[in-house]
Image 1 (cartoon, rainbow, N blue to C red):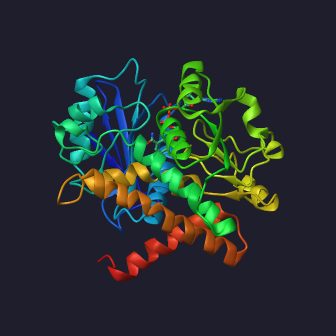
Image 2: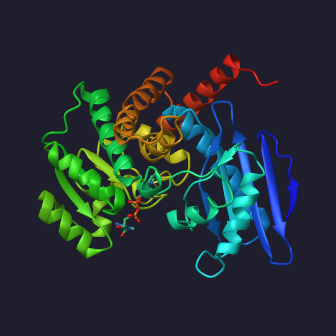
Length: 354
Ligand code: NAD
């Protein structure tokens, strides 16, 4: 294995590994470990070039620092990318090699599942390194993060109402959910049990039918979800859905969902503020998964009850972001970034690095 260190300003360590004879290439970026070891998933993707892979891993690693800081997971931010087609190029030999690469960082970077990798792949990686999380419950891991992500999203919606009208209750409120997959289904269940009215959509009719049947939701066509008369729009499907085409359609007072990278561009955060729509920043809302994993890493081991308590704490993090945004008159997404930077700076002041 040939490992090269790539100096990148603002990042603690960026390393690239190659196995020329096999054509294997991977990059690990450790953005910041002030608050703890850098945790972030391993993405396997068919990048156009090694430079594209580097750009992606740097962006994702910094995002993990911010997400973990605001959620107060006690972890830093990092990410790994494996260049290749997950459907064709993945093999136990390649994953084992990746495990040995991760191990060379001695625990500064801890890996987990991401796009193109699964819990089964993590088991293969774990034969070569102990710095792996998000494993199945059978081997003492934290299992499927989705119900925890959904719970975090539910308490975030309650927090939005508390911020706007002084009461957390969602009873009688109308929530439009886009995407009824792993997270959307559980979010619909929480909301229904708390007395909310649901309007839903998904690409897969069976998923829609189930939520209509179980939670008396009303189904609408995919493109109609943006213009629904409702209190909350909850994106739980795709990224970049808050854009020039969809924003003028929104009638909701609140946007709060689990999907990653909801704003097509940063300026759409300012546009939501201008329109008087409260945007709950995605990475604050969807931190339930990483909070669940952080419990797996605690010395006492994984405990679902403790994970739930930590996920409910997202409410406090989100309230702090809203307060900062209000105080400074800035978009909530920018306030979340500033909150993350402030938390990392406080950590740095408490324990300066040699
Ligand atoms: P999923 O793949 O299980 O579900 C996504 C659902 O969205 C699917 O049912 C799909 O059919 C539907 N969908 C896709 N395009 C759509 C469209 N145009 N209109 C309507 N529905 C559409 O994914 P998930 O695990 O539920 O995650 C949902 C989102 O939350 C993703 O953006 C994911 O990155 C993010 N997220 C998930 C977790 C987690 O714990 N699963 C954690 C953090 C963030």
